[in-house]
Image (cartoon, rainbow, N blue to C red; front, top):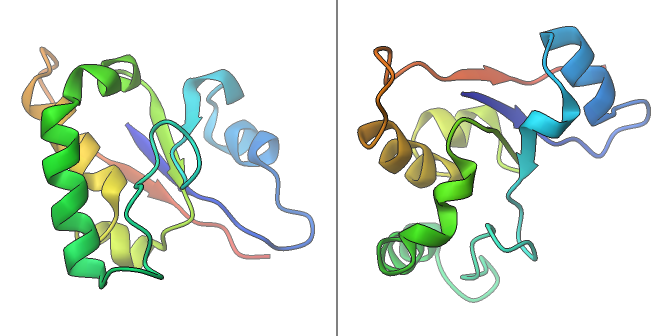
Length: 116
């Protein structure tokens, strides 16, 4: 699985990132807030730790909803720093899908963050 940090900078596009990585845009699913895979527990209302704890509970109660993300690459607004520390809801999704995976290399995650 490849994790791509979305950027709000001039010239950034998902298509360009996918081309650099040799993956298709269709293999990437954006999991930001407001999508069906986003964390519904806003940082405006909850501290980060509480938001992630609540998302994990929500995820475990609704994990079948996330099955379609298996073998997909994930994208979110979270930084590489937060993703690497497990402070992104995409990491919760990835960890579950990896533990349920038949693939031999279950813990391989590539994070890509390009700065212009």
